[in-house]
Amino acid sequence: MNILFEKINEEHFEALIALFKEFALFEKLPDKMMNSVEKMHREKDIIQGYVAKDRYNHIVGYVTFFFAYYTWSGKALYMDDLYIRNENRGQGIGTKLIHKAIEYARSHECYKLRWQVSDWNEPAIAFYKSLGASVDHVEMNCDLLMNDY
Image (tube, rainbow, N blue to C red):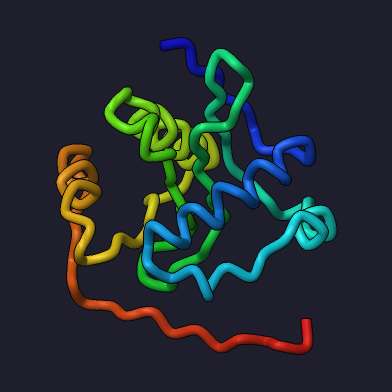
């Protein structure tokens, strides 16, 4: 397995949108996927993360993240998504991508890396616990959409 990891850049946007849609289907929330290539180009300055490419230069997974500040603990990196195409799972790509996020957080002196996992996604929960992450069932998502943007 020959996988190359690159920081996300504009040349990846089209392939990433396809993977974002795939991930939304996996999460059983396809109607929540509102992003577009055009929107990514407008917002390129704040997109952070890595892509994983196979030997054919196809993107087979990605991790996205951003800085956050938590009043109880301080600076953190929030991992928004970690996704690997179904046919590429089980090859260690997800482990390498999350370690890219962990390294990024450490190199920027973050107190923690935080993310969410769906309560039905038992393989992901087991994977995250194997990394030493604690998984709680305390918080729920609250989204207030700004439709004027």
